[in-house]
Length: 424
Image 1: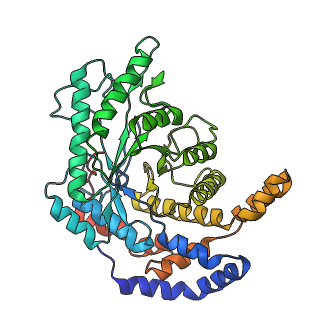
Image 2 (image 1 turned 90 degrees about the vertical axis):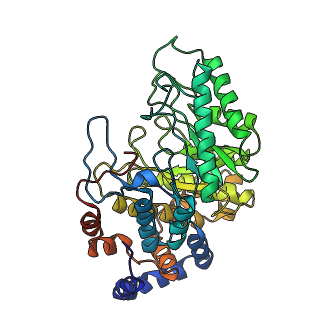
Image 3 (image 1 turned 30 degrees about the horizontal axis):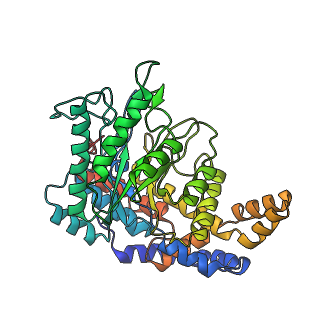
């Protein structure tokens, strides 16, 4: 479904008086409101195709109906999100879940919704029905060269699909590892993986990037062959200048200092992409900002500081994407909440007085440093985020408007109540 512009305008007209009051207050309260507003308008977060359906656990899955049954319907859902918040102008596809039969038509459909294609994602963590060899004991690390070659060829196929759609990057996440001591030779597994990645890297188009994603555990619980940022950084460094580390917020051991990891990767020019979600215990894939909003702000603080230090473009020089699983919520409502949390944390990080903070750090004024950080975090920046939406044609309150329109009810009417998103 598509939302007519006049309906968004009617929604905004009903809220604009209160919004103006809140916006004028923060505009006069902070020094750089207009600068922050420009940054918020430019900032876009990609939506992964697999986040548009209901997720699940090892124990069950409870679909809510109206899920996208095809790549076309997934594009329509991202277009719907983008129409509401004007912050999701890209979709990230997963192969083989989202193989485009007619790339030209798919690319044209995306353009109708103002979308382009973000990083392409390969899948060697599952066996497909027509697959010759199994990834049960790994893919790029596998002791059998034939299995490794199969994984390499799959990634090259993903690149070909990406070229046809206008994508410019490949994300590689490997579930490879071991569950029991002695099962795997760590050194040989690393060498096999590096050799496999090198063969894929050699086929990257000149302007493309490769993102090497890491994860501390799951599905393997004794070791992961790309288990932390250090291993990913090592692969990316050995591969070359087009290879980067991708950080997923849920892919760390408990209490890891993610903001410090980001700072160092930025310093070494090897941070390439970012997957947003939230967690209490592990890779919970919960709504962004729902559990640890202060950590999200601290992460954005390091992103802003590190990118500014390198004179990077906040909106274009890193790949931003949500990676979540919606077990209980309507997927589209969850994504709207996540985008809102991301934009708020970004705005708060932009509120930090960098000059004052640097002086306080130089003076070892710990109290002052804390006050500067927490003052920015405690500033209500929602009106800034809403104003960015208003100026770009989005809804002042996307979630409220989504519910008022009964979007899910309409999607169920169009698609059915028993649909299951492809790949889930």
